[in-house]
Image (cartoon, rainbow, N blue to C red; front, side, top):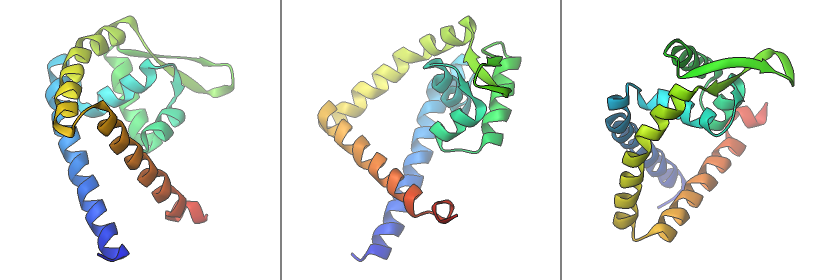
Length: 150
């Protein structure tokens, strides 16, 4: 297989993986009233307050997408905005107690999915190795992508 074939195959595999992850996560999160996208943002800020731009960078999606989801989470009472000491205009988004409770309610399903996935992959070490390889692919794509040349 040449490098162009490898690129095509990896792109298709990652796009399929994204669709599968989204479907599985929707299955876990819809019962809690969240979409997979809403869960992603809520989980990201659950680790600590983030600006909308910071959350977008961590997730690899546009600031506008995160802004739309953040506003929905705030409207639902699952997140709130607070002043950002590092930037007057860019507020920090943080989880509320209700948001933390929703994340806590989703965690058992995620843990069970992770347990089953580890079993399918041959254990936690193998899962970690695959995750590291996906991270390497992501970093390399960012390095060679059009935005890297600007």
